[in-house]
Length: 93
Image 1 (cartoon, rainbow, N blue to C red):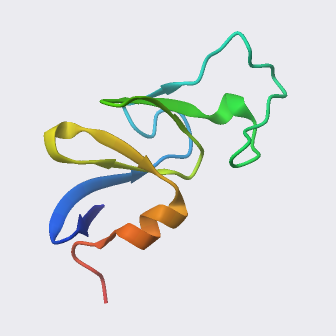
Image 2 (cartoon, one colour):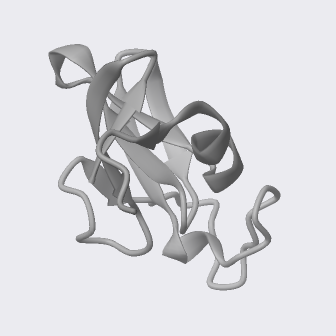
């Protein structure tokens, strides 16, 4: 889906599971157990991913949006932040 921010177009993908976006890698850590819970979305950590960007690694919760901006730099947004900042480039009527 194409979306815009301040009249600029970006590519947006909502991430739910591994394989939804090529730049998201599985979250792996020796500290995680099969019952580790995310403090942000309260889902199992094994269902999360990691997005590597220019500012380092970012945890991706299921349902987050990944926006690929200028220079193919990916950024993650919660559904609430995405709805607040972006709107469809070509809204359907």
